[in-house]
Image (spheres, one colour):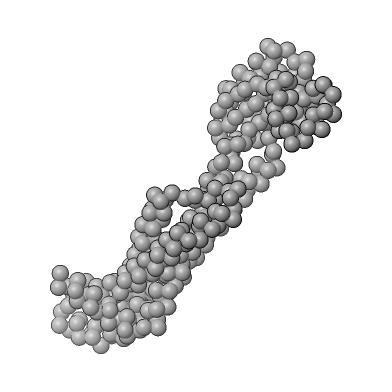
Length: 304
């Protein structure tokens, strides 16, 4: 206990000796962890939005008006056996027309122009359990010989499929690059924080080099000499991480409700449990950064 008190006292004195560098280190850790925290919250929101969009990814396969029911059933059974397919349904021409009428309630003149006819085809509707396989499943349906014989575009069966390929491809591509960018940003910020911690501890070591030499002469253990520097790096990190957590909580309480009000068409709600997990991650990450930065500095500049 006395050793811990000594480490703590010496680390506070290190704060005073190198105040400007110490503040720079704390501010760097604070800003780095704050940006990481904002990114984690934003990433959680984006992941939820992407997941909701992915859940809506489906394939609609249009069939000809004269397609025999047994052929339709055969295609449906084939599709059900494909990996990544959650369910397969069928929409008749009449059902398709009813859905179209429901979607056009604000434009009744369009319905009137149909003049009692039904130009809409029946369709096989495929829901996916794995949206990433949408291209693979769509290709397999288009290549199925039975489907080729009943699709409404026999010259090019792929034209009988609707699943927003370009939108899906763009969505998956963007989310992939966003994840890569996020990881790169986090690594860069952690590196910057490590450099500042390293530099601060280096200055502390240089300021106490005579005292360290005396400690060596009187037989102080390596752990006793290193302890104050580890404690100093940990304190920098804890203060910076707590500041980041405090600012994130303020943003959650005051900024997020206003942002949700401005973007009411999007769900920006993040549960309190997720915030608590992010706060824990930031404090732990800050502590690890502080200890690693101190350890690197001692390994290089403190020969004990």
